[in-house]
Length: 186
Length: 96
Image (cartoon, rainbow over all chains, first blue to last red; front, side, top):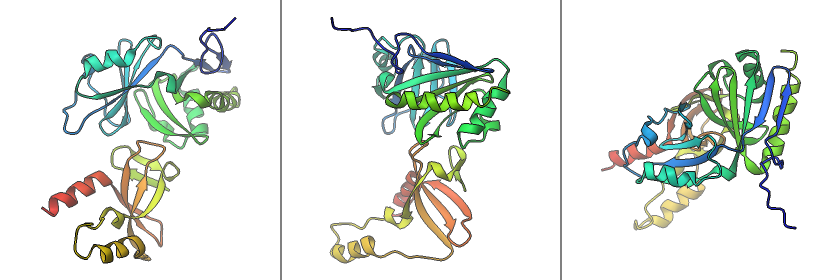
């Protein structure tokens, strides 16, 4: 019989979770994502009553998170709404802007630390060419991680999210796991 | 090598790709009477200075913006970076 059970970006029926020392990696298939781009000359809107963040920043209000992507462009996340038409909900909030559904183009991996900020900082230092000390709570940047383009979001001092291309999630997961495994002593 | 991105601060040069002389932004008018000669210069002739050079860089693994980076080709010192969109806008307003 045809199997129509939905699978996550890593191919499972439930989110993959792995723990190495202080770091836990969790796939987050429930997070919806939509991009928001302003039209030429348009004033900056405030979807869901939120102030859109400055370059390199992420803000959150309730289940909605927004991070800066490029000049006049943002990505809007919504917890637990991956199976809804979230782009349509966002479009109602910002009717003049361009909104594009992004949920299944990307996959989110949430990393949490049980020993505060130090293991997250060590992981960043190992993986990306960014100033890890300046990448504090509320920072969000796009960068290259093992030649893959990713968005990094510091959701809290002990939490980091990685948004990567859905088609290369397995490779991204492998890169993160290899780095986390080498930090088990921290 | 770090490039001082006008919006994002110091970013690693690995995130960027290089295009070439910033003069590529000044595309000649195709309707001008001497368009053929102007396009010949535009397409084939480049200055190759040993010293300060303005060049186009693309922030590919970042915010996908084009930058005009001023770099010393002898020492590789980066002297500044501006958004190419701002440079083009200033140029357009200056020529009005």
